Image (cartoon, rainbow, N blue to C red; front, side, top):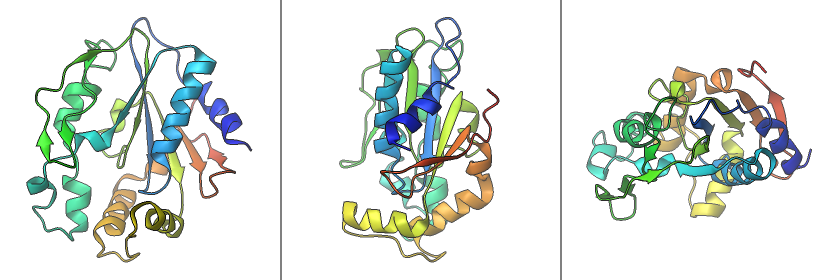
Length: 221
């Protein structure tokens, strides 16, 4: 199935806006699964098919500072899983304010990963009424985040395929062993949270040009 057609099949199942409330959609998957690209395409289809305003946010703009991310050691899988992101700030600036009954005042980011600067002066924005908020990131179905989403997508890609993509993208790839920070951290997440069982829909994205819908798991439409 062509990517555009597949994404349209998913987009039309997003819950309708309730008054002026926003609808939050999470795009989850392993590092290297194609979350950012898929989320960008997803946002474009939402605008064209649903004719609703769309906001694009990435959890990567809500990292913890380095001292917290690496407090268990730079090689720690537990540190990658437990300490990578500032969920309190994400909830304060995105999750709570853009959820039902929220103020719709939000921030696109709170941390600069390159400089390690906390962006306290980042301005607030106001979401248009009924906006769809598309968020990509790791670990989106962990307990701190799973209740945020009105709809969610899990991109199912093998660890081997993700490692090959990361080698092309970053010039390095994780070792596929439990003690590797990144592979091991993702394994902890999969074992603890079972995201494929919690997502609204699971998409096999092993072949970027030929993705397919595995199941509308948590989609009750």
